[in-house]
Length: 115
Length: 112
Image (cartoon, rainbow over all chains, first blue to last red):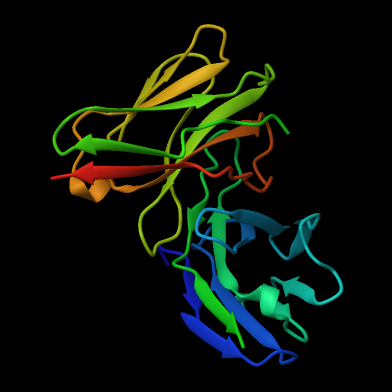
């Protein structure tokens, strides 16, 4: 597609439950990124993929967060045993990755609320 | 990572030009200056980027100081739709797959 699609739009989980978020990048884009926006202006980079391979996962809290990008499937971000502090908007972005024409195109985000 | 400093907020009137400053005094020679903005309840969107020369596109202009320690995003004629948080981000040359490092950005308020 021409836009990055993210589902669901909203997700509510009780503390300790699992949450799974999905992202369909723009067709033809090789790179996928996940970001977490906790407070209104504070973004945190989580992980990036080049096709189905993890490129950079330095921002991922590895104990409970995992992510995948498998061929012919939407990418996913999964949080096991959610905590209150995981409440945030999670954005997915994709890009062609060819420098310097590698602007990132963002999806509309998934708002996760952990109660 | 080289850091950027932006004012927390700015206010302007509709149909007037807006100049959004960004300081990046520790920029390295291979860093490109990128601007993104986030409209209310949306994901960020790319605005413009440059290295040394001033740049223009359909959305905005980017003026880069000669020493590259600062830059200014220029919206030539602001509309209500330009009300957003604007982020100035440095990206290292070749870092096509690197995550973006967002600062706090400038919240631009447009008065009708």
